[in-house]
Amino acid sequence: MKENDPAAKDEALSKLLHTWKAEAQLPPRFQQAVWQRIERADAELKVSLWQTLRARIEAAFARPALAAAYVAVLLFAGLGTGYWCAEDRSAHVESELRSRYVQNVDPYQMPRQ
Amino acid sequence: MKKTWFILVGGVLAGLIGYACIYLRATSAQRSMEHSSRPELAWLKTEYHLSDAQFAEVVRLHDAYRPKCAKLCGRIDAQNTKIQQLLAATNTVTPEIKEALAEAARLRAECETAMLQHFYEVSRVMPEEQGKRYLAWVQDETLMPGQMIPTKPAMKMEAH
Image (cartoon, rainbow over all chains, first blue to last red; front, top):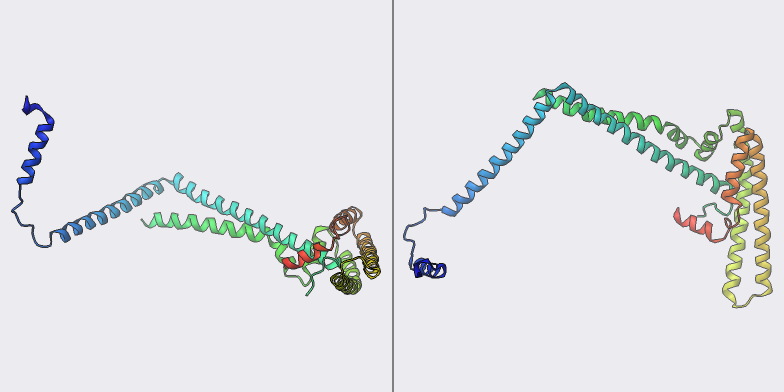
């Protein structure tokens, strides 16, 4: 019954591990080599992500409809942003000029030095 | 790959060109007003659809009114300084303070009358409907009750 008891098994294993001593020597600069391998693996992963993205974009732009849609979306985004910015600027300039006119004709609102 | 880059850059360029075309076209009137010698009067011309002849007359009236306005401005400042000095010198309403406040009120009435006269003259130069619109707007900006409270010019001046 004792052999089937998990707590007893853990205790036995724990004792065994305490008695175990690693005698093999690590190769020189083992840690440095591990880190270099990790870095290389990261770099390879990054390159492969970029390559995947590039391949996907190329595949997408190989379809004329998608390429045209991309250009059209950017064109309309540019037109929309331009219109919005122009409206904003026009409103600002007109408001400024309105105020300047009022300041020019009203002695109570005229700017003082 | 060359084709992909061409499409990518082409799309961005199309967006930029679209932006520039719309922006420059939609702000051309404002830019021309800003670069004119008298932007505020150029705005008046655009806003109230004045012909060149009407605009020339408005400019003439404006130029004639400006010295009067500057003179009134000087008198307002002098009167305000006087009131401030009187108020700082006492803690009761003296006859001098009463008189100074009454003078400030007279000055305000004089200013309003001069302004109103100028606005009527300018509005008569404009097309009838535009003249009415101009009068409604300019009176709202200058003569409406609460508009000519003494703190407002000072607040506006701080903003500049």
